[in-house]
Image (cartoon, rainbow, N blue to C red; front, side, top):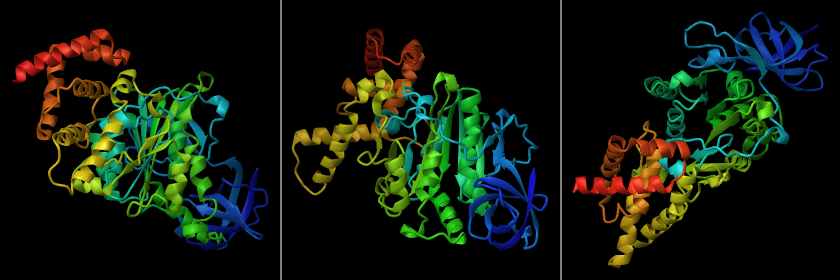
Length: 478
């Protein structure tokens, strides 16, 4: 069954169509032979469609065809290792991709009875996150902060950390510059992460339609692996600020009433229908999970603006990257006072939970103490000792980009910290000392790391083995 209509008017990428009496929202329409549009609204006289690409070829009087099918995209295992656009079409000059199925772009989120509570940790390899803002598989964790504070680096490090863990990673680039996308692709290619990743690109040079569809198509690609293969999927949306801008532009062309910050009233629904698609499925639905890292850009640290506050309210926590911390040289520049994970330590390794339970509070107290003592001269020995301990912890939490740290190594360093092996150490020597310690244990007792990774618990035997190795290492380094 087909229905025919006619283009009455076109405003940028929004087409006004007459003659289509039975279409519905989200339905696909064919303009000419190669141009596709998607129905985004109605008024008294017209059907309003968004041209996904090729709007320059559409003109008033063109014939429009609509079929009953909803808008779907091809999905399948062949997409792994490839770079695609907002319609899941390959753009890496490596030929067509064999698709197994077609999934709806605007898919419905799994119901409450289809989900399970989150119990498994997603190891990001970023020490400060794994220790103090743990992420569970199936969680939606917002990354929020000013531009150039390391948000994309956190996401790419988390992707690099999934190597060998049977996790499919999807990096969705929305409205960013081509140069920044190429940088991410270079990092993923050099580290071998493209073997288990998909890059979906809708940069600023792409059409409004492709940028609008990009995050939904990325979710559909992930849903295939979650539903059909029961696999864990990790999706990064970089970033939803640009997505909101595109939707505002579309809404103004659709002549919808602007509200707060000129955004339309349904901007909350735009992102909530997206983030609700994440979760952990029960075994009857395949048992897979989909974890989201949506990103949002703030202006001068203002998290109370319309779109950032919307996303804070609909996610399971946020990681706040701070411009002052970044300029001080503390990287990753995560502000622990504003960062939170609402899943919390439910998903942490028992060993990590045991060692890091008080670390966050200690660190926040150190930052407060540091602020107070900055303007005072002559502090007591006790305060000086607490400050030095805080600086040591700060050095432990620092990390170079592109170098994710396995959870087992983080636990060993934390164990050494709790046992007082960093006491009195100069902060400048912390980084070298912890690297040498890991090399020493890998060389002399690698089985300790294997047992800890397998059980995720600090048993009495592992503790005794670590104590022995720490003592030997201390003797050898004197």
